[in-house]
Image (cartoon, rainbow, N blue to C red; front, side, top):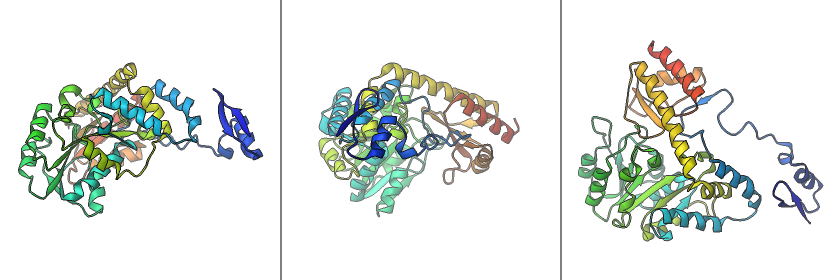
Length: 373
């Protein structure tokens, strides 16, 4: 039989199961399992390592999740089409150019595997290369290009490194872990210079946080260059890292190829509800960005007071030059402050994410003690 339970009159199929009927009626957790302490940072930990945004999700997103999670019995294909249409409309594209995925990580891996395996992936030596490692594990060859002396992506060197075997160029803009943005016009000129046989992938996960998103993005090239793929995520400015929602924008042909490599279908109902509700929530997006920039400024102030240098961040994290990144990481671990250890050979560079004021305060105390400031 069908019984009504919960706010808003959500329907639950209780059948003849007394335990399930009682759980629905009483609003208890699933058969007494306590889930309260398994989400978010562990108790007592200042989590500043994952580039998350503790300011979000938006109230509009949370309301949508609460309202529509009761429809979780159903696949969310209609919601997928709705959000795709919204994304396409915002960027002046046709819907067949947009691919939704579980966070941007999934579709980035689809690009690396589906397009990179046609030859060699060309990328900077230092960037968010999880997707490249995924492709390497599947047998794809990767060629890495050193950064410029100022830690920026060296587009001239990237251009010179394009050989006949290169099938995919992977760039993160702004870059991670440096936080630095490439000049929009310079990147657009680089993309225009690439042979159309080579796909260019630009990961714009942090684009909404940049000082000049409209100038820095390469979205205007999508209709001009059929070999361009741009990936974005709801994990950063939208504060939805745990709700897993991201997307790619590209040509219809490449989009069709990428859909063939997706590991999921239909979408995550909670993430879709949150994404649809908050995608155009400009008051929230403005407040979220302001929170992140304020937090970043606090980190910069602390770092400066310690006599340390940083890369010029255009994101929600800061790359700080320290005597020994791994030694600092261990000091932070002891104080239950979670930052990133060294990335490869960059042993003097330490990445810290923006976060709540109290967490930044704990980071500051350990950093000052470490450098003797």
